[in-house]
Structures are given as structure tokens and as C-alpha cells.
Image (cartoon, rainbow, N blue to C red; front, side, top):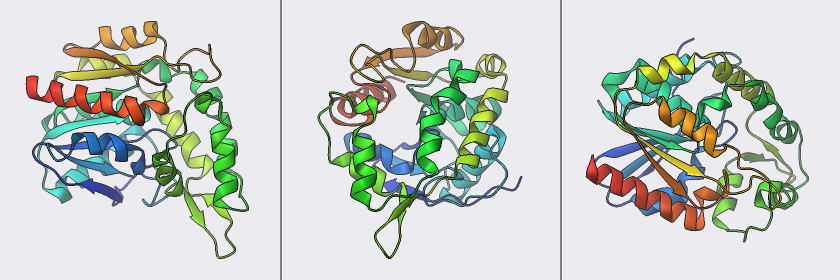
Length: 276
């Protein structure tokens, strides 16, 4: 499939300029707080992947190879020959795919709560609630936020208003004030299928650059629920990488991108880059 021109959020800063990619159903604004902890020392480019946010939404082309081709074109457009790339969840796996298949463009990989165990049938079960949310319209943005606030992964978490910018970028607002998600369920399901189809152990064997693995072990759900990736699953991915630094950060798969989690991410990424 032909590459598409991606929308992106640019956070000005020094060199290198990092490229950070969001999760399966997310958008580029999920990195706003993390980027604030990285700039002005480093620049950050955060794209909306195809089918998400303000980027084009073709009916086909949601394999990992298609996403990777889009990113290579974006790097070309930005005049970035080689840099550190990273991502949260799906974006982390896409980073590994790029490092394995386009090594000349990747100086290092930042994995933010990503593991190859996501390439399983369990992923289809995990995204069912998200797909159901994408199929609906809501009478107002506040009604949409009420549903989001009730999500189990925010249980017991002090709501951070910075999250609302991310969710605002996730929807289209109609003239009557109603909203509906930008992403389409079929595209997200196709992207999940693309993850499951890949030979991840083979890809990881080809990753030669340094990798920073950032893992959140907080409950992904009500208090006491397991994290989205267990320690064993994180260790499995870590063991398959030739040069991997592992760091635990506070929060769960969602909340790690805000508050204390975002601060820890910024500090860990900065330290790792300076030590590379």
C-alpha cells in the first residue's frame, strides 16, 4: 500500500529529535506531558499513525509494514536521516519493527510498556471495549469524558486535566455539540491483526541498536488487577534483545503517561540518551 502523509505534533527542543509513536487506539497528544519533561533538551515529534487522530484513514494498509513505510516517509519529510524512535504499546512494537527492518534509520529504541506477548489472541479480547467505544456517538464531549473517567484503568487515580487534551484530539465535534471518535473500529482491528501476524522473535533477533524498556506494573483495572504486561512477559521481550536497559516506572499502562509516570519517563529517557 502507498504511504500516507501523517499529521504530527512537534515539540521544539535540542538534538536529537526523538520520534514517539502512540498506542493502538490512541493519538499523538498522549505524549504531551512526557514531551514536556524532555524539552527543551530534546525535540520530540509525535505523529498520528494512519487511521488515528488527524492522519488519513485509508480503508486498507494496516500491516506493520504499512505503518513503517509511513514513518520512513515522515522522517524523509522532516530531513531526519537517523534518530531515536520509540512508542507506547503498539507504537513500541512498531519501533522494534522499524529497528529490525530499517536499521539505517534507527539509532535507538524506547519501549514504553510494550511486549511481544501483545501478538496473541488475548489482544483481540483486550481491545473489545475500545472497539465498542469507537462505534458510538456521544451527546457531548463531557458525556464522552464521563465514560472515560469510569474506565477501570483510571480506578483510584487522581484525574489529571492534561488527559483531556488527549481525549479532545480523539473525537470530532459536530455542530450540535455531539462527538464521535475519529478512529474506525475496522481499522483498529486490522492494525491489531497486523501485530498478531508478525514473527516477533525473528524481528527482535535483528535489532542491534540499544533499547530502553520502560515498564509500568500498576493494576490495569480495579485495585489488585494485574498489569497489562506481567513481569514475566516484560522479561521475555527483554531476553530477546541484544542490548536492553530495563526500568520500572510508576502507574499503569495508561496513567504512566501522566503525572509521576511522565516525570519518571522523561528522567529515564534523558539519562539513557546521555549514557548511550
